[in-house]
Image (cartoon, rainbow, N blue to C red):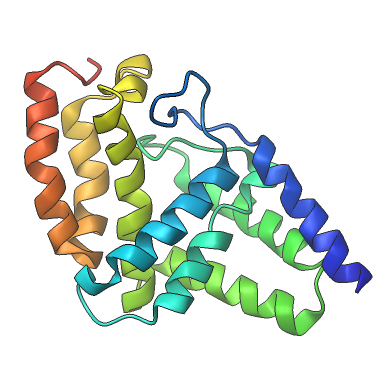
Length: 192
């Protein structure tokens, strides 16, 4: 029991990891725990649009654990273009430590899900990636490009970063976003 309690109390720290985008209608920035909760429900709601049939329970669990490494590393904006190999190595060390609080069978199961999502090769991982990449865009589209403008993120950079994983995991979601992103560009919602 104590191992599980230690694990869940370690997860509490994810609530303190601040991201770069604001929740719709709020002045504060979202945290990584909110992001994980929201995209898990988004994936559950969107599963019928996945590029291939998926086990939605696996997808939801992947999305709930995918940012746990940020407890040690902090959040990196999805539109950052450099340093990903170092970042992912640091996150692997973090999730290995954090999942190590659990008995080995449970911790190993969560680590395997985290690793599967990082590899983005299974239908579930591809779909999870699509949902994860779409959420910051959806929030920015709802906030008149708030984080794109604040961080100097250009339209081309957004499309380059999110289009491939969204098209691979949920083509209907990319179709939905594509026109909205173009409309946001004409409105000047992107950074220079």
